[in-house]
Image (cartoon, rainbow, N blue to C red; front, side, top):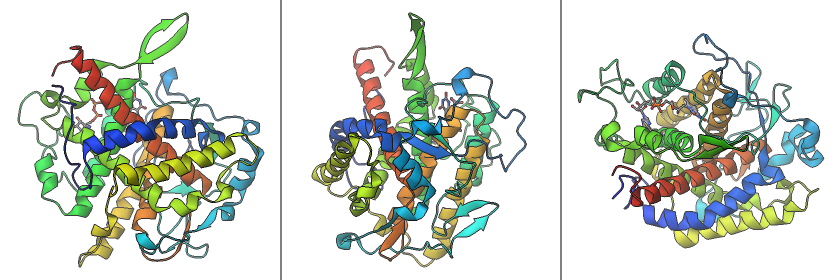
Length: 418
Ligand code: FAD
């Protein structure tokens, strides 16, 4: 049996791997279709924000697989451009969310801080450029898929180390090991094992799982979309078993690879929970382009998505268990600051394709957290861009789950070590 044959309960969630696989069979084609639609494929991003944490030797990796071209604004439907110029058009009042508890709007124009030209909502979990800023450019996500780019070595190692080491509740600080990320062959390698995670409080466990699941989903895509020999001059992409094993095989990850894969499932459920919790937002007509035949289809798909999750997995993630203890206020602020820092670390990724998808997923997870962890008011302001990031993030986790199952099938056909 493949090490990637996962089963059982997903820690800190309420349903099982089997439930999620079943749910995802239904959800995957829906979110894929959404991600291809005009509303969801144009994402606005500042790809040139400087790295705040260290001096970069190279601003960009040399590989042409890393490059991302901003798209011509005329390609973007006029209605979307108009909405993006008017962030107040997306002030969505969360209506009938009674069964979900009250959501508090901690954001208002006068509360929002202005930090070095960046617009930071007080309840935001990530740093974003001001929606009206000229630094934001449209990128067509469909034209720039996440896949193997060859980005490896010192730069990504430094990024992951900064994320886990300094921005993950000092998870590793007690493990005095300077070679944490060295993949040593000897068994003395120490890092955060699932046993250590299990001993932490729920908030810290959740934070770790979010980051580890994000990391695992990125590496999953890298292993699943690896260049093959070009056919008639066209580059083609497919699964690379060696890379998959390097990233996740227990023998190569000190036994942790399968837990990292499980964290993809965790993130999937977290985002599904946020999207279903905010279901009244998605019913608003203004979320669609108004100038495309796709609008009706998009609305129907979003509705189907929201209806299908509770059918298969009635209780996806229970955020009400978090931030309840005596130190919850400090813990929540720390949680928020650390995730904001991770959003800034994404500026330091020296490969544009990787930076684009890293930023988008962090943005999407941050949007999910705003929905989940808002306190008690009935309104929440989400920008179109946040909505785009949120649904695309779900699409990415959904695809990663499909990819795990593809590798499992490859293993069943004896292509892979068990
Ligand atoms: P890394 O993935 O660099 O991992 C470093 C260490 O982290 C491991 O040795 C292990 O100790 C620990 N670790 C690994 N996975 C997990 C996990 N899931 N949970 C907890 N701990 C873990 N490459 C591309 O080809 N295309 C991309 O689009 C791409 N996007 C990226 C986006 C970002 C934001 C970053 C930082 C990197 C990206 N990369 C991308 C690079 C890729 O993630 C790897 O860093 C690279 O392939 C080198 O892999 P590695 O085997 O050295 O281990």
